[in-house]
Structure formats: C-alpha cells, structure tokens
Length: 294
Image (cartoon, rainbow, N blue to C red; front, top):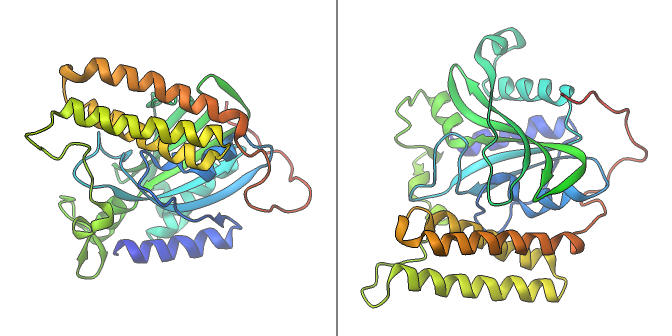
C-alpha cells in the first residue's frame, strides 16, 4: 500500500473516532510533535484529540536525518490515558487490516529512555513495533524547558514510509512510494536543503553563522511583535540548523553550543505569548477523566 492510500485510510479511521485533523505546518519541521498547533496545545487549558500528516526531518525509526525528510502521522492526545494507548493499538491494526486477536500478536510497545531535544522535554517514551519492526513512537510529556504542564499530554508518531514498506513487503526499506510510480526520494518538497552549499568562497562555519543571524533576527522580531507563530517557525529553523551543525564535527562544537543555548532562550520567551484558548472548538462540558499511566 502506498503512502497516499495509508493517509486516506488513517483519515477514515480517526475521523470516525472524532479525532480532528489539523493542517500540516507549511515548513518541514525537526520532529512531528513540534507542529505549532500541537506545541501550543501543550500549554493551553483545553483537552485535545488531534492529528496531522506532517513532513519532518527526524524519524523515531532511524537515527538522524538523511538527505530527505519523511512523512509522519502525528496523533496528539490530551490528557494522556490508558484508553488512548488501547486505541493506538486498534488504529495500527486497522491500518494493517487485521482483527483484534491478530493485532495482539503483531503490535507491541517497548519502553525506552526518552530522547530529549533542545527543548529539554520531560516524560517518557515507547517504541511502537509491528512484528518486531519499529514503526514509530509514543511520547509522554509532563514538562518542556522547565515548564511543568498542567495536564500531561501524549503524541503518537508513525513513520508512514516504514508502514508502507511493511505492507508492500519491501523488507530492505530501500525505497518507498507516495503513489504508484512516484517514489518519495523524488519528491522535491522532501529534499533537505543544507545551510552550506559547498562554496569554496565561504567556510561551513561562516555559512552557518550567516544562517543563524537571519534566524535570530526573525525570532526576535516575531516575539517583539507578539506574533508567536512567526517566531516559532523561525525557532524551528534554528533547531534544524543546530541538528545539522552537530554533524559537522568538533570544529563547530563551540558554535553549536552557543546556538543551543540561544534556541532554548527563544522558546522560553514564547511561553508568555502562546495562545491559551482552544485551537479546535470542542464539545460542551468535559468528559470524565481517564486513568493516567503512572
């Protein structure tokens, strides 16, 4: 099954469960849960049951980013609950068109140390596996950048390329198809754009410094104008830049550390101007509280 068909099937399943789809972020983001309308929801007062299909660089199924981004399904749930975990297993089984009994033998969750980012998130994580192959992860969030969340939230992130390859029987994962005849490696929108073009007239460090200065000015202008979404988008560019700089070796460690500290400062300045009201209109009243995993 190609990725486009998986997306259609996922939308059908989640819409029946009253899960609201939000638009993808217009830029390729570092990680799926960093979608601006999900991030702001962490700090809002309302509960949430949202999903989106989002291009991102980092995959829970591999280490680091390669030459292109990938497509991910991100399912955000607030509050985090046992019931939602059961739903995730049911959702994955539906994608693979298997009944509940078969799902129990194929789907599993494996606890692991939470992989922290620049945003220093607190919580825990599970890898999600299908027949022993990692297809994504579930993240539990209790705090971000030292800010304790009033309500713990969860994000299930699925690598759609991996799921597609498993269904198609492509065990080597050497390619994946967006639609018949269209490979994801050929999609221009997923191509990674490096901060350094290999120019002999400019060193990687000078190129990164120029890129960083543009990002810094954009973030500070957004914060000064209280346009959190503009500042947030530029802040995500900063995280991606730091991630790429970290691959350049020890010669850029000092600059990377400077950028990391500044990035954390950017996002801390965003907290006071984040929207506190619902992003998506909800139903009147609140449902009974579900048991939270301890």
